[in-house]
Length: 413
Ligand SMILES: [Zn+2]
Image 1: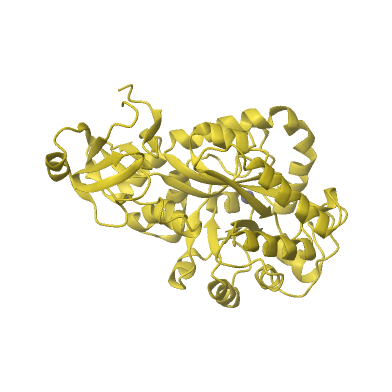
Image 2 (image 1 turned 90 degrees about the horizontal axis):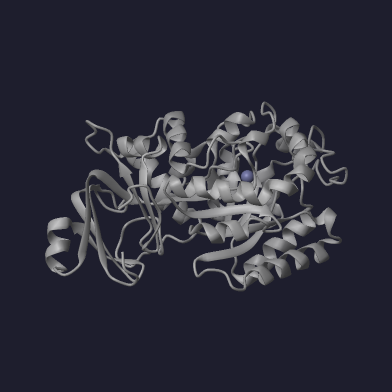
């Protein structure tokens, strides 16, 4: 479509997510944003001179918001799963080799996400190394730069280093790509560095990403200071504090509304749910990664009942089979017995809420960015949310649009 010209995208089924589905529904896109949503007959009549692109056998849905991902891994080097600590030690062994192909892996992972209808991604990578590939992909998002204090110096030096690094990387980014900081995990970042990073990012108004309560080994390390994570870098001696990872994270100030905590798969009882709900922290649910690494099942239905914001995350290709967030979501739908509408909301608006960007994206509403995916329906489908999710999970995304720009188009039109 010509740059800057308004255009109407319409489909046999339009699913705004924030409101009920519309048969033969349309969105009017102007200057990258949605300016009208409704039946094609109305939107077309009110905008008679605007080009209409109508796809009768498709569903138009908000793009996937991936609330926790890593881009820099490639499928063919995936370490064996089974146990988290075993997987992590193999991962660490392979890091030197990854230097030679990490950038290519990040490009490929991002392309896979684009082709699966992803329009926003919260990506975590060491020192923000995957920022160039995310920025080049056309997806909007934030890269959370992970830091490992033992590689840098004192907690003060480590936090100053990563904040300065993120600040430097900020310059010249596309309008909708940001960078912030990640406190990688309770077993890799010491308590004082965690506390300082949480404080500093909060003062700056930045988001914060963490991995939390992911594995049985993490629970053992934090509680007892023992197990497979106790000597992961040979220098993490701060475990054994006698509480759960969630309680520990709260004690060091990591839990707050601008924090997104990935996994929460192991050791999350009612007591932890109380802490999570009170702190306002959001969760990123990565069930396929949890399954691969023997990490248990995150109590997502209980979290939602408690008002904890939950989004979906694919994690990366070293623990997950694909970067398709809709496929991840179908796994969660079957795992927790959710209905299709709940699944579609988790994959889109749920992720946007978890990341605090729901006023900008995550549903098809006037004023939000025109971030959406067009999904080809299978023959005989009636266009229910579950059918649309299954189709998107199975590779039927035909068009991915971010801020009104078509970043993927397999229709050739
Ligand atoms: Zn992760």
